[in-house]
Length: 475
Image 1 (tube, rainbow, N blue to C red):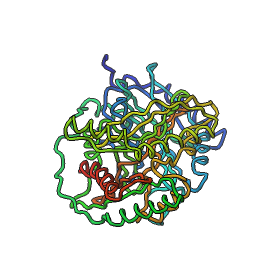
Image 2: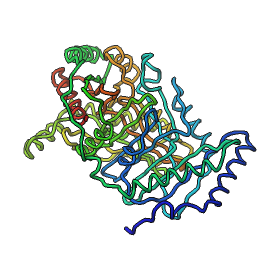
Image 3: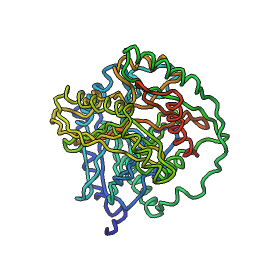
Image 4: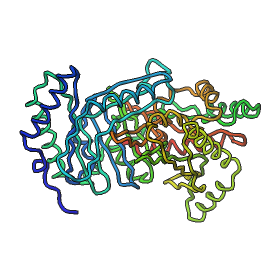
């Protein structure tokens, strides 16, 4: 790949950029409503995680996303727009907000290369209402960042977004644009993928402050009683582990660890404005919509990885032959197909296969469909969440019992997190294998699907394995 010049060489001539800002401001004056200018340009190779390390500030919203298999990563921070919703219409209201705001955005690009467009970022809690007054995250949060760095294989881009008001000082806006560009240019020049791993902070032992395995096993048994009475087909029960570190957890180094240990998962991080971070390594994509082509995954049924190749094959065969695991998986696959059909989407399932991760393997059915143009991503998302992979069947009954059995607030655990761009593309994952971090405290989450034939001891072992996955990466 040929070298990309420094940002200063790519910047529009000042008078041209000023003219674009002026046109945007005239629109703001005519409509008596702020407008947004979105400036996109290619940059030299820059690890988005490194940019997050260098530029993230306290009390900022941020979103980090990485998929090692696809060689994609996004770091977004700051907020030009941020809004919160709650209640049963939260997906619909978030969709309306994004559609409305897109009409106010003037897009500017500085070169003819393919540009990753500006994105809206969104996260939704598992339940549509805050369960407790001390909830860290709103039931729905949508934000449009001030700065976004994107890697798409060998192409890297910068997006800068600014709100232009009728009274905005355009010269100051220009100064801010040049400030960001110079900062990114400086980081590009010293960019080193290994820099993040250098001088790792001291990693002292963690203290477990809350973990109630007996309560989890009791809940599993109670759920099995309901299943035996035909009141439930399946329920997913989560378990939490609260830990305290003598020193604050280091977000960037934890994400780097997740990247290194789980390259086959989606690495993610998002935040509120009180410096609380929700991070994880999720194997589960809820939906991806690209140029009208939908991809989603039925992911349920699991087994550990073997310590030897022979043992690994043995565990895989046991998983593929397990009636209990296949029944759990089939419930998820059928649910997704039925929910899509309600939207008029006819989907196709690929053959059942194994998804092998670092320390666990799952039954996996990829599902594809063509989506009509009038169906927006959040409408599909609302139809899919929560799947039986994270809730159960029937969904409403399972969710009611989840709140009875679990001793903690799920927050963003097992809920959708992702992005939408202005071309109708989007991608959302499910926030599992995750942790909520507040300073030197962390709450880790793991869950297991309970169906007829489940064993409380084995289900506890499964969730403890998932908790260990995230615990081992915290720095």
